[in-house]
Each structure stands twice: as structure tokens, then as C-alpha cells.
Length: 139
Image (cartoon, rainbow, N blue to C red; front, side, top):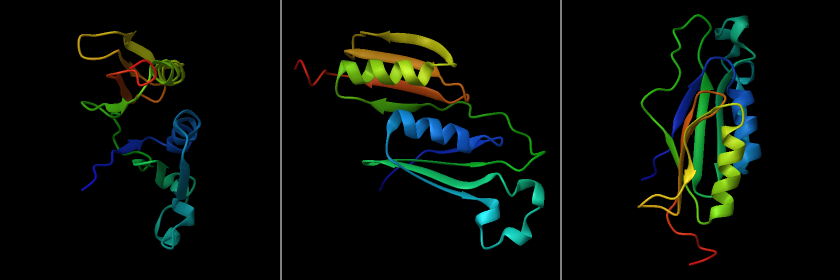
């Protein structure tokens, strides 16, 4: 069994996932409502919105879609995506790139459980944890 996060955005999932693909690497697959075989069953106003997007990098799969216009959207709350990384330079890179334009909740630092750990909310409102338990480059 695999557990894959599925996020919802209010019309900007394509922008978010293009950014995530730049930061995390991997293969991006995207389908707009207009691309669906059922496109005629959806209002024209949502055709440019994303019906489904996925980013696959190694064993990681992150997925999302856009909400319908006018639906209440409160963002993603009460959940974080945790990235387990193997070395400090990678933790530093991810922290720097994901926090750009967002909000740092806990700066990247050493803790009693990790060589480096950080908490941030990116510019799209998604909460991330970066955890580097042991730096594989230094042992």
C-alpha cells in the first residue's frame, strides 16, 4: 500500500505543480477539464482549470486538482507534506526554494531528532516539513 497526498487548489494547481516540479524534479502529468472526455458536461468557465495533476519523482507521487469556481475554498489545513532528505545541502536547497515567497514557521536547524528540520508554508499555502535525520554525506 502507498499513501499519496492529494491537494486541492482554487484555480492555481498548474502554477503550484510547475513550481513543485522545478523544486522536486520528476514527471509532471496534467489534465484540464477541457481535456476530459466529459468536457462537454462541464461549464465552459472551468475548462482551463485542472481536473487532475500528478508529480512523480522516485517513489513519491503528489497529486492535486482545482476546485470549481464559487465552491468554498479554505486551503489545505491541518496537514503537512514531510520531505525526508538524506543530506544537509539537499535540506538547505529545498528549504530555500520552497520557502521563497512563503512563510517560515521554523527555520532549518538542528534538533534533538534530526541533523536539520524545518517547517514552512509555501507561496501556495501548502505546509511542508523538511527532515534530515542523518546527513548521509558526513555519516
